[in-house]
Image 1 (cartoon, rainbow, N blue to C red):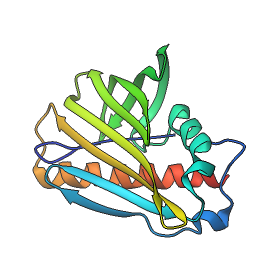
Image 2: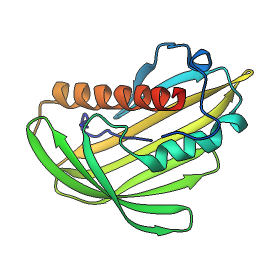
Image 3: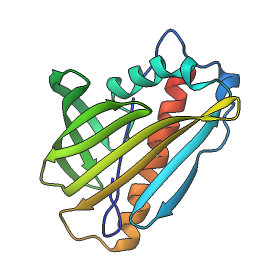
Length: 173
């Protein structure tokens, strides 16, 4: 989870409305950069209403980011959950706390403390896409230590892509 002069994000688990393997069918997850944030997305065959409960369970379940080694819930307050995440960025272990809140079309997660990042925000969205659903994760972060921009961008893009792929796999279980 790294970025250019900023960029990063994440997600989570399953439900009674899990996807059949055909719903995702292993279609490729695409990524694109817009300024200092990266978005990874995929389109599923099921409509958003059929996916929302499983999507929410996946987000709250955590463990989707390839950089997060574990996480714990510190507090729940309405639509928001304060989470402590233990991460490995390259060879550097670190922790940070983030506030994960439900929105009308997904989830927003903002870092509220930790030494690895100056700032970090993740936005998960599920949106209608024809008869199916587009699932996307947009990440923006600013790391606290120096990394060449190319390494930061590659790290955040790989982590974002891996997180969306993990979500799709979890929904397919």
